[in-house]
Image: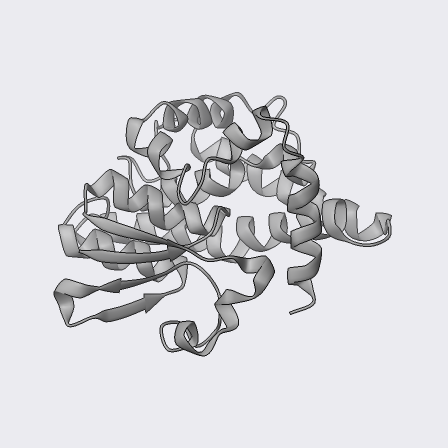
Length: 228
C-alpha cells in the first residue's frame, strides 16, 4: 500500500494518474495548501521541501519519495511498466519527462502566477511566460507529428506533460493550430485511469459545475500560497 499526499494540481495529478495507470493500491491524504499543511513538521519529515506530491511506500519499509518526477520513476520501476528497461527507450522517456520538469512545468507555472494570481497586471512577464509555454507546446506538437506518444509507447513522459498541458486555458496559452498536440491531449484524456487520477484528491470540474466559485477560490488560495 502506498500513501499519497497530494492536492489538485498538475504535479499532484502526475502522481495520482501514474498510480491509477499502474493499478497500485494507494490511500489518498489531501493536503490543504492554503492552510500550509505542507509546511507542518510531520509533513516535512516526508518531504523536507514542503511541497506536494509525496508518497510513502509502506511495502518498502515506509520509504518516502518526493518530487513528482522522482515519484513517477520510482513507481514505474517498482512495477516494470511505463518506463522501458532498455537504455535507449529509457533515455527517450526520461528526456521528455525532464522536458516537462525543466520547461513545461516552470513556464506554465509562471504564466499562471502572472496571468491569474499576481496582485497587479505585469504584461511583460505575462507575455514572456505565455510565449515560452506556447513555444514548448510547438516542440511537443512536432514530436507528436510522426508518433502517437512522445517516446513511442505510452509512458510516464506522456502523463507528466499531459497533466500540465491540459490546463493551458488557465495559463492563457492557446493550442490552436497544434493538431498533433490536440489529438494527443484528447487521446490521453479518454483513458479511464487518467480520468480517475485527475479527480484525486477531489474533482475540480464537478466543483466548477456546481457553481461554488471554485475558480475565484483557486486564485485566492494560490495568492496566499505564493507568500510561503
